[in-house]
Length: 156
Image (cartoon, rainbow, N blue to C red; front, side, top):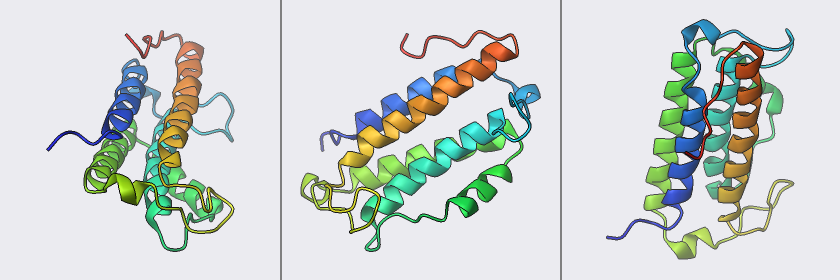
């Protein structure tokens, strides 16, 4: 069976994100530019959580959850970069498994009514996931520079 067309989108997103992460080590877990901002570990955990959120929301009969306070509380529980990276890997693996098992016809079906992509075809989540992870990849690149590290070019 040929690879699903949207799997490459997820794999590229993961590869680029992990390449940016490669300059960090566990000593960087708790760095954040300001105390109230996400740490390095939180940035990664939030990105992982959001990949899961996109997959779950696109296929849920009720659409996307909007309890963003709970989402943030769950992310802030993660303090170790290794735990955040593992979450990110699991989220990408789950997304790939879900998409591989989903037909193109199913991906064209509308997302449940609601304020987030309500009524749009499920395929919109791929661009949104890529944009969201790129946003946090960029934040992490800035964090790296603030602690004297040079993040690698993600596309090389």
